[in-house]
Each structure stands twice: as structure tokens, then as C-alpha cells.
Amino acid sequence: MTRSLRDVIHDATHRSHARFDAALTSVDLRRPDYYASFLRGQAEALFPLEAALEDHDIHELLPDWEQRRRAPALAHDLAALDIGVDPPPAPRLARGDGDPTPEMLGVCYVLEGSRLSERVILSRIADEPDPAIMAATAYLRHGFGRRFWPSFLATLENHPAGRADPARVIAGAELAFAMFERALPPTASNTPAWRRAAAAHIRAA
Image (tube, helix red, strand yellow):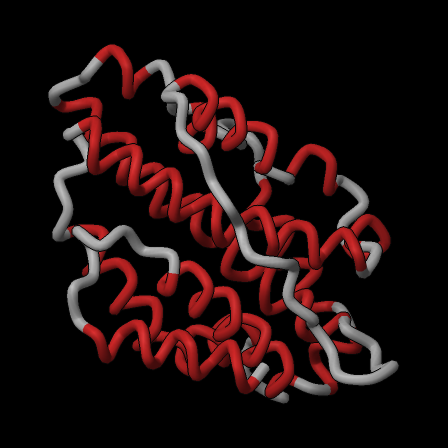
């Protein structure tokens, strides 16, 4: 490969990324009920994705995983707003006995990249802060001041498994986008085609 793997993944997933961002932009997360739905949807995607990574020894790929994982921060926010969740099982990241590293890199690309969107969401809700919402923003604030994104990109670009099979890295990223999209609150996505596309990505993974 002569192009950066980051650019390859970005180009291959830009429609999924843009569709998801557009859905969230359409929702006023300053409303407590909408914000609660947002957190519930994030949990229904993040919890199983992080569990899948841990099932495949993500600590070997990212030694600082304990600092990166956001499930505890999201669990804090759910508890603060008394939100119950029922996340689906952790997805499989590789077929058979194959090395799941390329798919893991793709999933991590989405999880780490989502921190940038979460900064935007936090700035939006801080414009007209609701005390209950602001007390439940540990998830959105997670990683402030840390160089998680650039350090992940270094791992992405230099790992031989990812460079050798970019198609599987893209498949991992599309799986993660699909899970987040399928978990969108009803107020964010009322287009059945979006949910059909998300389900199709997950079935094909």
C-alpha cells in the first residue's frame, strides 16, 4: 500500500460516517429525554464492541487499553440518569480461527475516532447546560488531554496485519459503524433504510 491506511478506511466508510453524524446532528441533545436515548444507544453499541475487543486480547494490540476503554464512564452516566440498557451480545470479529487483528483495528478506528464527534456534542449541550445532563458527561469527556487518537493512528499504520489486509480492517470499521447506527435513538433515525443497511452490515460480518 502506498496510501495511508487511515485514508483508505476513511474513503471506504465515509458514507456510513456521514450518515451517522447527520442523524445525531438532527437531534437536540440538550433535551434530557433525547440525551438519555443517545446514551442508551451508545451503550448498546459500545458495550458489546469493547467486550468483543477484550475477548480478543485487545491489551496486546493497545497496551494502554485500560485508559482507553469507556464502558465505565458510560456506565457512570447511565446510572446518573437512571437509564437501563440491554446491549446485544459481543459480535465475532473474525471467522473461524483467523487472526482478528485487522477487524480489531477497524473497530478501534471507529471507537477512537468517535471521541472527536463527542467533543462536538459536549460543546452543543454546554451552550444551554441542563444540570442533570452535565452531571452525566463522563463519557463525552473521556480522554480529554490524552493523545489517544494520534497514538492509535501510529499503531494502525504500523501494524503488519492491518497493512496486509486492509479489506478486513474496513470490515471491522463498517461493523462498528453499523452497530452504532442500529442503536440510534428513534428520534435520530426514522428512515427504515438506515436500519436495514446497519442490519445487513452486521449479518455480513
